[in-house]
Amino acid sequence: MGYGRAPHILIVGGGYVGMYTALRLARRLRKDEATITVVEPNSYMTYQPFLPEAAAGNLEPRHVVVPLRKVLKGCRIVSGSVLSVSHARRTAVVQPQLGDSFDLAYDILVMCPGSIARTLPIPGLAEQGIGFKSAAEAIYLRNQVISRLDAAASAVDPAVRRRALTFLFIGGGYAGIEALAELEDMARDACSFYPDLNPAEMSWVLVEATGRILPEVSPAMGLYTVKQLEHRGIAVKLNTRVESLVDGRVVLDNGERFDAGTVVWTAGVKPNPVLTRTDLPLDDHGRLRATAFLQVDGVADAWTAGDCAAVPDLTKGEGATTGPSAQHAVRQAGRLAENILAELRQQPIRPYEHSYAGSVASLGLHKGVAEIYGIRLRGWPAWLMHRTYHLSRVPTLNRKARVVADWTLALFFRREIVSLGSFADPRAEFRRAANGSPAAVAPATEAAGVASADSEAAAHRS
Ligand SMILES: Cc1cc2nc3c(=O)[nH]c(=O)nc-3n(C[C@H](O)[C@H](O)[C@H](O)COP(=O)(O)OP(=O)(O)OC[C@H]3O[C@@H](n4cnc5c(N)ncnc54)[C@H](O)[C@@H]3O)c2cc1C
Image 1 (cartoon, rainbow, N blue to C red):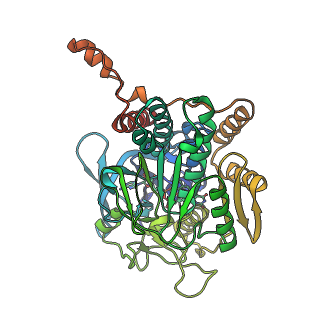
Image 2: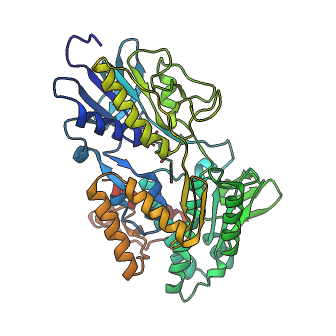
């Protein structure tokens, strides 16, 4: 309002909220009404609900991300991270991927950097664990699981085999459960190609600190899911905490101890810490304080939504806020964009209000659990519902077509069970040749699996 020229809108983060807000604004704004800049470290938005299927090899990882430059026509995309924001000065400090940081002036701020993994100070966690929030992590885990099968099948020491074949997941929300269930399904499927491996040798363990999993659905559906997982041989340990993970030796608070070759941490999220480097108001949980109109509380020209924001949930009682979910993020983005447009055009803005519809979760091929508007589905119908719902939600016709193509191919051909671990260090062979070193034999160690997977993730990122 009263900017004296077309205002500059800065969107921090190109995830769910950032991409959908920019998309709606770019489509609805006249050229002279405003300019838009999106700052995002990745060149793409990640459709996170499809990450478990990408990890399980049912979807090509490139098809679960949306290239920002292709989709956000008319917006300026800056590949980098916002380091801090001084809203009083209407300036953000941006660290581009290359070169020095710089100041970026703006008139209107949309703060949506999402969340990061909420970890605990468990010894060994930082060294042994991996999260499950990005395409790189999904690719890594796919390679890691397959490379552990490869390594175990060729190992003679029973203890080495047992460790390689033990997969520990910590945290029973939908991200963790879907990742666990999809990867276990893939590994079991893959075992048929390993005559030296008996699927019963694999140990898949879920540790959850509370008394139930999938808090997003009713307790009955949570219990059903526990039974399903146990039926598949997955050990579900409720009311249990991990005390130590040093060197991959797992110590639980019930006294149990075992070695795990893979540790996945999915025990919740916390707001992105960049919020603490702004002059905007935060709540007790470190989220940006927001109004139901998606404005930062008491601050002009600053908007927020998604995982990083404490948005009042008008469908619930006083003090309730909307949870961190794509369901809210995508709808909030639409309302946020409309409210910015309304303000620019000096029209009334409207509050965000959406009753949480429920959740759908895939538990492997043809397996799932869903609870939508109180309707409970299990098994195949739930799995179909999961696919139908997310297909309708994944942005752009191009992505939808690619996802359908992947699924269709999977109907006729079994998934690939190749760990492209040899991409670990693609220049290694050439370096050795150039240095005149002897050819290397890929070591069948845990570290090799980790390194391999990391580098293929990097290859996909590039
Ligand atoms: C595996 C998994 C499965 C899920 N499945 C479901 C599901 O089935 N249903 C559902 O409703 N929800 C699901 N969710 C949750 C949902 O994906 C999130 O709630 C949603 O992505 C939140 O949107 P957001 O825009 O707030 O954050 P994000 O989508 O995470 O976007 C934040 C963006 O900000 C960028 N960023 C971070 N720091 C900076 C910085 N300093 N500067 C600039 N940019 C920055 C990040 O790179 C990221 O792209 C799932 C999440 C995961 C991890």
